[in-house]
Each structure stands twice: as structure tokens, then as C-alpha cells.
Image 1 (cartoon, rainbow, N blue to C red):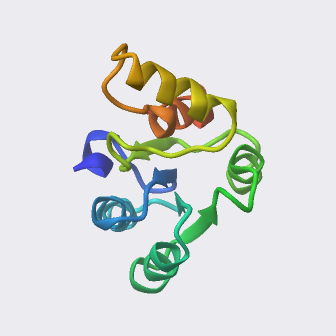
Image 2 (image 1 turned 180 degrees about the vertical axis):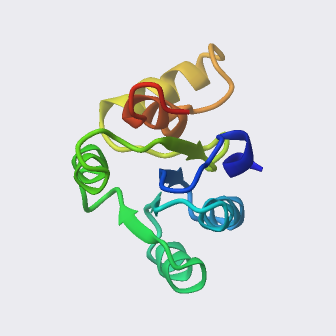
Amino acid sequence: MGADLGGVKPGDVVAVWGCGGVGQMAARAAMLLGAERVIAIDRFPERLAMTAEHVGCETIDYTQTDVSGELLERSGGRGPDVCIEAVGMEAHTDGPVNLYDKAKQQLRLESDRPSALREAIYHCRKGGS
């Protein structure tokens, strides 16, 4: 669904945040739609291994690697053509952004932690989806 709504076309570079069931299906759908490269991003080694083995796409552990630099390098310096957020409402991140999101959540100023969605928006190429 995410790959279809994102408009994945043959030759696209696709980044998927989250390697759970939804993320794996989105990555596989992007591959079936003809994406040149599919990159899945998560922090759990077992999910990353399962995605690499069963889906056959590239993976990035965001706790070990600079996601921004890796995505730029793997996409020829422009960023992914399509970014799919498949993490959900309880996204995790390191650093001050996580503290900020948790504080807003505890003060009931927001109901979720949108860090994965925020990253997907920041890293998508100009004119991407």
C-alpha cells in the first residue's frame, strides 16, 4: 500500500523506515514495482537480518550509521525518490529530539512520537514522495 501510494516507479530509490511486518511488505512491494534500490532502516538486528534475508533489500541500522549520509551516498547524492514510514506511533530516536517528543507526549501536547516521519520528510529528495 505504501509503495503504491508513494508512486514507486522502475528505477526509483526507495527508503523504508521500519523493518517490522508492515515495513517488510512495503519494501517487497517497492521491489515488485521495479525500484532500483530499496533501503530499509531500523535498529533491531533481528528485524534487519530478517528483512535482508527474506525481502532481499539493503538495510541500515540507524544506531550504528548516519542515516542521512548513507541515504545520500546510496542514492547518488540526491536522496531517495520515495520515502515510506512504516514505524507507527511509537517511533524511537536518540538525542535531544527524543526527549523533546517524550516531553510533548507527557504534557499531552501530542499523542505520538513522529521522529520516523520527520526523518522521512527530511531525507526525501526534492520533488520526491
